[in-house]
Image (cartoon, helix red, strand yellow):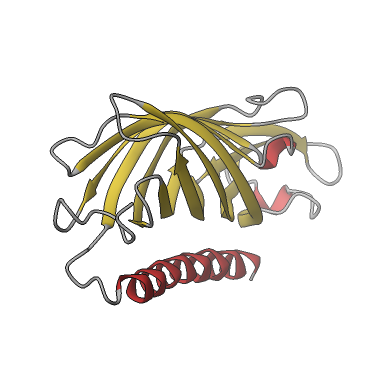
Length: 229
């Protein structure tokens, strides 16, 4: 039940983000029908989860995402983002309820999934490079499948306080990001890279991300933002 609720919450947030972007664009672009300042892109990099000991104490892996948004001005981009962070599996030891049999438990982790709405503000006009900052809010979901692997057929021996099977955790997440953006190539392709902090300081709920990304602008090159500033 908890897993279904977490999954519904994530996809509900993703649908809300997509609807918000579409409604904002539709309302702001009215009267500017030839200006289609929409963008779609992707990022690729690495991320790690925090722990009580350090910002990357729970290990990490590849972190990638797909993005879609709308340029409000040449400095301000509102973006929706779906991201995935690969997680390392781990194993632990416990004993049967009567304490007579040692047991080995495997925990298979699924990628941590993020859905977020972010605002990217770029400093200064487009030049060779310019800094930008990001603030965002969203939700992540962790999923793990626990199973008893040694001795064979040991599921019935696992204590009830050590539940097997799928379980999930879902939390609201806040994002702060800094980075560098390059010039818009041929008026279409934006390149950027940076570092992001998700729920920084909240131990296992936090994630540190380093990424490189690219996005493509659609529409006429002389009308690449809603307000064309």
